[in-house]
Length: 155
Image 1 (cartoon, helix red, strand yellow):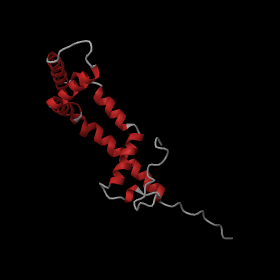
Image 2 (cartoon, helix red, strand yellow; image 1 turned 180 degrees about the vertical axis):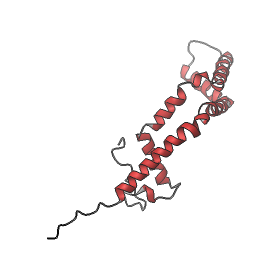
Image 3 (cartoon, helix red, strand yellow; image 1 turned 90 degrees about the vertical axis):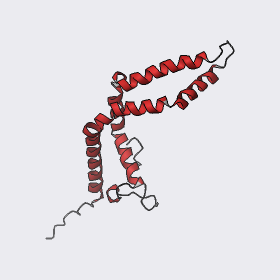
Image 4 (cartoon, helix red, strand yellow; image 1 turned 120 degrees about the vertical axis):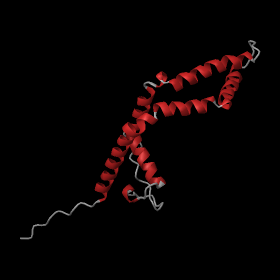
């Protein structure tokens, strides 16, 4: 595992021993952490990110946000007096703060998510996540069931 095999090693009682995730109630923070780690180790989050990033720049919400930022930056810089001694890091940080405070990023990102992620959520992402969770929990249950002792021949 990417985490050195530590996933599933937290104890439900805090004693540090392994736990069976299948015995944890739905919504338990330990169960959620174990499942998220499992999804990460399978590369699902990376796959989802690539899937969503592949065509984000073709979506109207992205193009709209990009245009707003492209218009905002020159307007912001026009309010500043330029000279060669200006601290560029301070100028950049001030611009970044102004963009964030304007609220355009939050609104724009929400719209991008609704156009890029939401359509894929129920039909693409959810089935993959559910399948990975079922496989993970099934493997945990199987690992928790003690193996039957070998049969003894009684002659």
